Length: 255
Image (cartoon, one colour):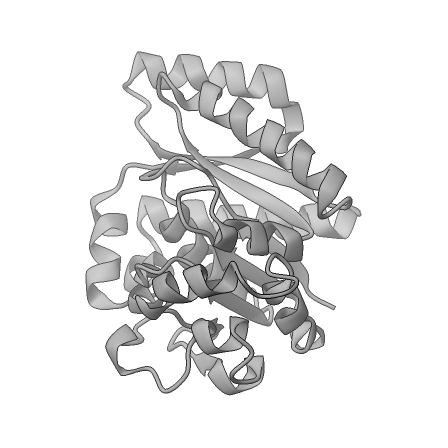
């Protein structure tokens, strides 16, 4: 039975999609059976997986709206994981969702039909606390928070934790933070090092040891429709995401 993990942060530009795609590819290489769910209407995780979002026969939109089964919409990514793809249609669907019964549970119900087929299901969330993000957090067992070590990061993380606590009370009592991933990290930046230290002090072993560096190869990979693992596994970014996948697997085994 799959562990369902939402990759979430209310702040944009922190590396959510980068983490979702590269972690899916790294886990698939271990090898584990992985499903990546693209829940961001921009469809960046879909494109970065080598799937053209403009040519989808089915997408997560139809799945959430109850117009097709989850299995029908799933496609195979070139790097060994499965993908539930997305495109801009999801923006309009979110508005329609507001009038539907159980609107916060639609994704959870859909994923339960395929959950037994995987070991990990990763959900790439939009950068806001929208109805789509609520669907992801209602479906998830845990959350991985990608975070840049910058001035406003700790404040944003505090807001996210308050949101999670509220959701646990009303929507998903078992929801937990799996861990915090430091992304786009520059060791030469004194502020980044200071914020990283504060993070570790406050969250202890919830902070993953694997640190995702600022890396040109990591930035190039999506333009080739590949993860960093497929594009340049030996790069600093590739090594970091393989390390992160290893940490997640070890934590799961300890449980």
